Image (cartoon, rainbow, N blue to C red):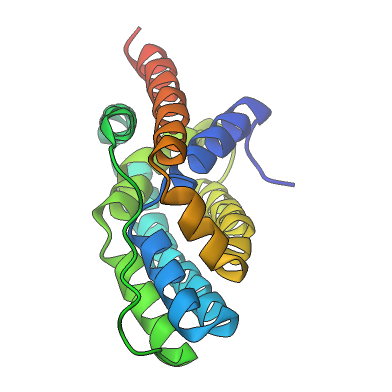
Length: 210
């Protein structure tokens, strides 16, 4: 059982799903490798993304746990920054235009290379960095139990949700690319994700500032 209250857990799942389904660099890398190298290579790229998330988890656990212990005020400030960042993501999603461009002209890569490229893409993705360092603290309650345990549990849940979305995407890459390549479908994904993210941001800012 995840050691956080059900309200925070529900909010985390909603925010995580909204961000995960919004196509970004991870989506492009996975689709490119699946389309050029086949399903096995695409799944290797999915594995690479999760390795990247494990790196972010380790850094976040060390940094956020130390911050909670040393300065509750700074921790509170970080959660507000995370809420503002979530609002920015929502606005960016609502402003999104066009379809998903996936370059498939390159030669197929092996599974090891696909995994390595996907891991590096995720590790260096500013959106993921900010998610872990600024947004994740919004779903941690220092009074509910060990902060490290909560962070690890939330990160594990994020990785599980990621796999549930990305693995089928790699297995059905061509259909996914065609579907996301239609402007009307891309706009629908962006609109829904944007509204959800803005709603979550408003709830978080209300909680911290009112």
